[in-house]
Image 1 (cartoon, rainbow, N blue to C red):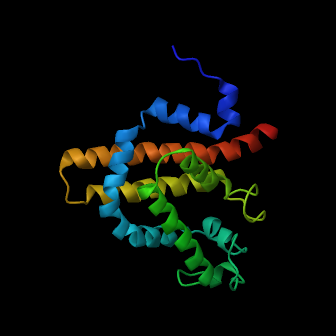
Image 2 (image 1 turned 30 degrees about the vertical axis):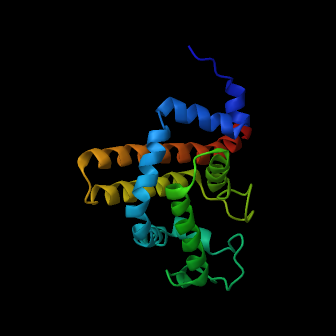
Length: 195
């Protein structure tokens, strides 16, 4: 039986990542499958981003997070939810960030720097990083990751690839989104424990 220091899982993001990846079996073969998918999925990222923002802007609960100034954005702000659209400069700014995030998933090495990147993707949606006024509730983050997962998996299913390759890609991305979800939830868990 492998011994795990559970305190480290809460204090050391790299240890946490190592534990989760080992436990669910996310390994080098999964990373290879994700990297192999890059050539097929990268050209489809704009479509995935469009679908994501259609959904985000379809609900006031999720759209409201795009009214305050986004971290790093310096352009004009919307005055209300009604001013938000796919074409608004702040939404364009956010879409570029999402595109870069998805490209990082497809092309980066899965090392300590990637662990920090995935962890920051969770943290940036809380007041702990970025704009302190933006605090996306956990239920919305879970819904967003579920949407990403469904978009990615349905896109892979539509690819003209043999079933074995599709299965490897589907399993790899499924594991990856569970890892990302854990690295989101950890930033909310501490808030709940302090209440």
